Amino acid sequence: MNITFMIGNGFDLNIGLKTRYKDFILDYLKVDTKDDMLKKFKQDIDRNADLWSSAELAFGQYTNEFSHEKNEVEAFTNCHENFCVNLAEYLKKQEKRINYGVLKANLATDFIQCMKNIMGGFRTEQRDTIRRSVDAVGGGFQYNFISFNYTRTLDKCVEYAKAEVEVLGRRTYNGHIYANTIGELIHVHGYTDRDMVLGVNDETQIVNMKLFENEYPEYLAQIIKKETNQMNGEYVDRRVYELLEKSNLIYIYGMSIGETDAIWWKRICDLLSQKQNLRIILHCFDAPQESLFRTKHIAYERKMRERLIRFSEFDEEKNNEISQWIHIATNNIFNELKDICTEKIEEQGLKAM
Image (tube, rainbow, N blue to C red; front, side, top):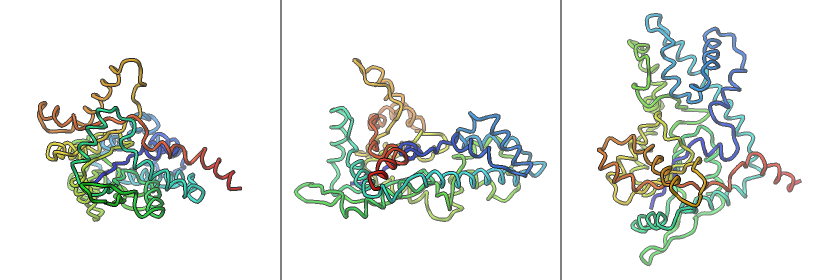
């Protein structure tokens, strides 16, 4: 029974890191540069702050500021690389705010508890629906992770959890007892120190494709995610495809379901149509508060399902069929890890003194 978590930037935000693009850009604009092209690049970012809060899509549009006739593709690539290098350094500094030495023991325990709480917060009917699909698959639970982050915060949680216990409890199925374990962790977009992937989903998200005509394909590959992963040569996309293929339950946490990751949302829609017992749990942070009537909440859940289903290539009837297997979670499954880089460090640090 494979349970796969797809983890986005919301995970790092939840633990208290300032990892939004808008946070980084405030820092980036303060970095001194003598290069005229980079100066103009930063000025353009400053003038279009809203656009650059979604930096990946912004790079696709920013190609229009460069001319193929003037052979400016390398200048564009230099801007992209400078942005990425500085982003990596910024994220390293953010991650240093976490005192892993102080938090190690509690981090392992809390993370294990979070993984076991995947059905927490659901209404009875939805919980029963998910449980029936889970009960249809034998074996122990194997928890896998696909990280869309460059940081290693999730890696540390997984590392400490593995060191804390050999198995995450046991599951009885058809009279047999199986161990629950932690399986794979794959970084689909690389790390802060290698194989970084930052760009668009495909060529349709690049405004000025002429910029890359008659040039080495590596320049274009640097801003198309799939091409960058192929260039990195680690079979990352294939491994993620295979992991999703064997998953029985996929939990999406901290992700905006944005266009620059369309390849993965389309893949999930395809799998929903192919696998009878596959279920998706989509966590959303901004749900309306519960009130006397659930009308607004139900409308919100439908809207969130549509956010994922829009990447499907099926007709309306098929989309309605697969959307019922997408369950919207509004409770924070990783609440035990919330703000660990601020209040909890100070609190535990004082206790240790």
